[in-house]
Image (cartoon, rainbow, N blue to C red; front, side, top):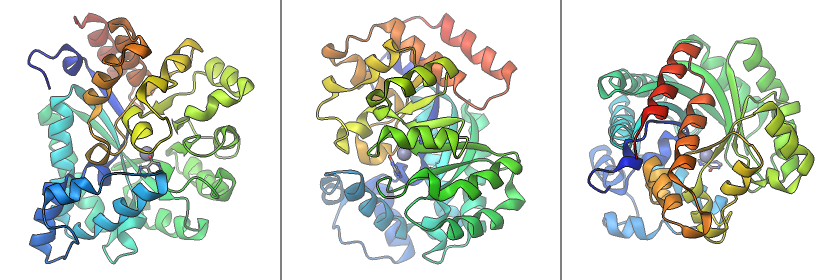
Length: 336
Ligand code: HPA
Ligand code: ZN
């Protein structure tokens, strides 16, 4: 990042970040060697060259394939520790972090290994000036029965280490209706609820995430613009949308950044935020996403719009009101 980077220094909350998506090629290769895992890539450059995607599925295939290097508690601690240091350097003051337990359990890594490893890293976050929450995501291409079994196994961490659930992976063919029991159980357990919807799938998935799952926040949600009634509702209810511009570009949800719908979303009065999704794969962490937007003249984002996006990120978070207000005051006082 540039020296004296005022966009980098702008205080932000990151609300859409898959910890498995922060696995940088160098760390993947280190962990592979440490764990005696063979990867079909000779070096970091070769691996990075594989980060060219046609769509969501072609990314997910590589994302799941590379999880094989994550085996021990220490591996998860190292992964999350590296993310937290990078995030802190990019102005992230609060991070609500997703993890995909099923991606690990189904290849023989215990849930306890994953959660304990992540928890150890999150305990170091206050020392970096970052507050955190952990959100357990479920893979929508697997069955609801599979999700329910993992959900029940995670109960010991509810309310302490794990504060919410999410829904991710292959959207097309796996609508929200598939997971109504899971989300009802999460509600009954007092957990927060978010869901990916309207990334590759239709606007109806956003409506269903709200009505059938009672999702409090929608991840991506960019296709809401195809349904004016839905846009009006999202604006009236100020339902947060966690938008990920570089992800949308790399997964070809948009053709170019100049076509990104974020300015239209803001003009509609939506509570949109900017996030990095899977930064190791998509070419940047959260401040890099802010910079990419600011550097695209066609989007016409002024510094005051960047401030609005940062304020939105804290408004859309699951922070308590007092902490939220303190962060919002810092955003208001920031000088570009
Ligand atoms: N969409 C769906 N599933 C995911 C994503 C995403 O952007 N990133 C990691 N899992
Ligand atoms: Zn995502």
